[in-house]
Length: 170
Image 1 (cartoon, rainbow, N blue to C red):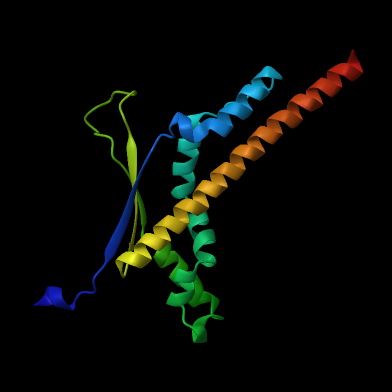
Image 2 (spheres, rainbow, N blue to C red):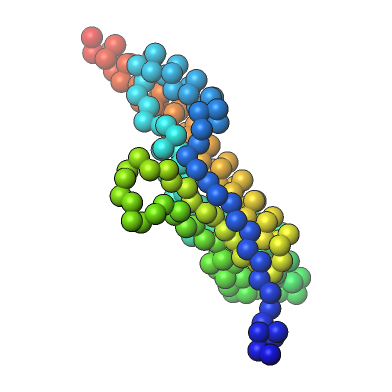
């Protein structure tokens, strides 16, 4: 009887793996061009994957995404929209519903083993759970892409500055 009184919860899940070569064509093209110009780049599929997972698990990024999400705006009704304490509590409670679980078998310590992560969000219904998780994954993907482009720009700027100093000194 007690179980009938509990509200239903729905989880949406996504499994992420290391990006495949076909997903990194533009990144590869850019790093090859930079390597030809003798600009060092340390960005590869593993680096991109780890940055995605790190960013997905960031409390600050969860809160940044949720602050502007329709989901949180719906949770905090119009009469409470100006109440920063209620808004902050709704954001923190919602952020806690994201999970990232490593699917690797802890019994296998092979560094080359296939690894994937299951990302999930638990919400009041299936559609909202899927939309929030999908939106957050898109938000993190965009952020990782922006960070990657910025890191490549910094590498070019550093190489250019070093070249200018060497030309001025030489």
